[in-house]
Image (tube, rainbow, N blue to C red; front, top):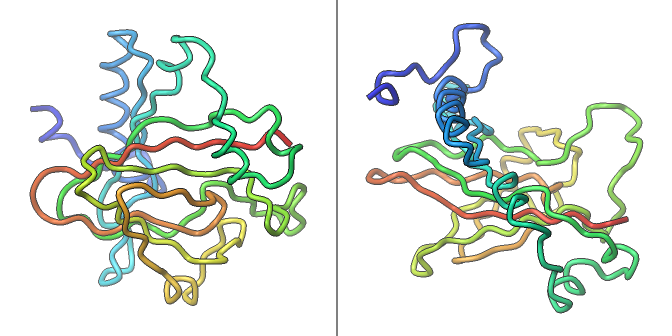
Length: 207
């Protein structure tokens, strides 16, 4: 019941993401169980009508729980070769994210973003064209459902978004998708009914 009554936003400041209070409370309860599971308020939903955040979105991280089970298996050669054309990029790859998204019903599309960003004028380690570093795997447990992720093809802007990028949004509909996390993207709007969930894993090149 505390979940139903909790405020989506923390009253400590306007910059706090919607859902931060709930995510913090859920994580505190999971820590009591020593589950190695953490809940985060991720990039929120955004309303074009009010031109502001309109609701929360959550990410449930299983990284620590997975680490407790031992070293992750190596990426299969076929997948590794498809992700990284250069041999040096396939050495020492590792998992940076593992878990699932959780989105309330009736949510607007997510705020457009990139998972890897840099606000400096001179980027110290810019992404090289054609050489993805962070690859995001997303899939539905129910293969009859499609991921509703929206992407901006070629949108490698260090996370900077402009109006023209929203005009270039393209839906990617499939039960499972792989995309470059440094490309601008966002979760699509959700329908009424149950919460929407999508499983994800993010792999990083070793170079």
